[in-house]
Image (cartoon, rainbow, N blue to C red):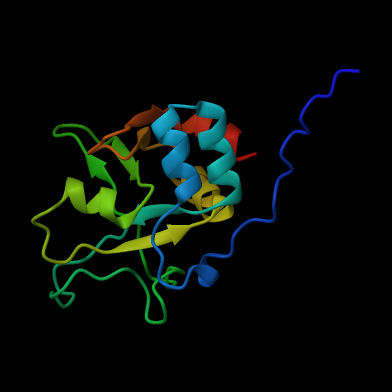
Length: 159
C-alpha cells in the first residue's frame, strides 16, 4: 500500500495585532529562500508581509519606528504605503518584505524608517485600489532572495 503525505491544510490567517512587535514572516522568508512561487502565495495568504510606511516630511523624526501607536502591527487609518517610482513615469513599484531587517537593508541610512504589517485582505485591498499605477511588485529587493511579481498575478494568488 502506498501512503502519500497529506497536503498541508491552510491555517486561519494570522491577525497582525497578535504579532507582539515581531515584524517578520518566517513562512515568507523560507518561501523566498526556496524561490518557490506557490509557497510565497501560501505565505501571503496565511501570514503577514512587511510593508514600508510613508513618512511625511512634517512627521517627527528619530529612531526608526514600526507602525502604529500600540504595537505597530496594525496600520492606523491614516497610514499610507510607501511606494517607489521611476523618473519620468507615473507608474509605481510596490516593495514588500519578509522582515523589517530586509527593509532596513534597502534603506540603511533612512533616519525614520517605518513599517506596517499587512495580512492578505489588507494587501489585496491596497493592490485593487492602486492597480492602475503599480507596475511591479518586488519581495526583499535588497536580497538575498529577491523575487518579483506582476500585480495582477499577485491579486490572483491572494485569492
